[in-house]
Length: 398
Image (cartoon, rainbow, N blue to C red):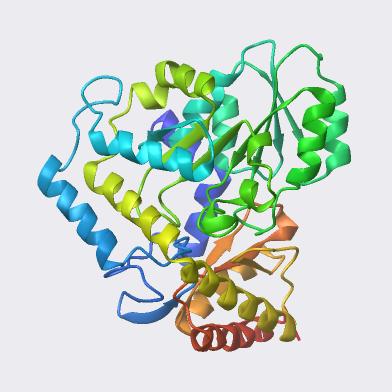
């Protein structure tokens, strides 16, 4: 074994993965044998899908699928280049225009993935004399984006506005102070305290970027996100979104004023040096956006089933934290038991996702239960009762 292999074999996550595999409770890379709907086939098991981020339930919608197929027939399977050179299609530009109007900003840029939006945009916004200030539960793509920057990297305790102000007070007043938060935090399901962040923005002359990956299609007018939900779109300098959740595709975007977008168009490395979003994915996201805007009953259905699930989990004694969204954390607070819960739930016909370090603290482990607009109350009830049996058997709840 070489030095690299020896080093990797000693990594704690390598050992953990090996242990849970040997115990038959490995929860990752499970294969789905068809469209990702509310119920799926996986390795001979028919299971309820409560592990998806497809909040609007559009991944299997025939209109979205046909839009992608038609784009592939017209434009081919890929663009064979970056947006900077030969990879810009008219549908890329059309989608950017529609997204900027939808979000409420001057312009937008589309990237190949949501992750590459954050990892490419953040390093170009600030320099070595500036500051990036992150909530300590921000998404990994934000963490990687700030690591690629030469700015001073600071963070504040989750949604703790007093701690954010303490951090801002340490910054030089004439330097850029970029505050970056998730609109909806992807593991716990709670919202950023945007109204208070905006107050601090004005007090300390800061800049705000909000990652709306888990809030577009869920919050705000026609699903415009948390910034719209709070009526603070104009106060937020940059709004990021992804196509891989409510927009039923793959890709991402950043929306901002014209100066910021024109700068990023010529500097964001993951935009300039990555192949552009494929035609099929671009057209699928665009069609999903049209559907979300034209079918408000879809978001209403999502909230009806979300509120039902929240009520039932509370009634059955689950600890669900401060969630305000279709992401419902069911706290286990034990790493090994979290893996067991996921395995037992799967055996009982329910697919859920484990959340363990580094995505949370060791004593905050949980399983993540996520709703889609096309889930039914009957499906939720089946899942709640199955999970109740698992949690009681493991003495997590009474």
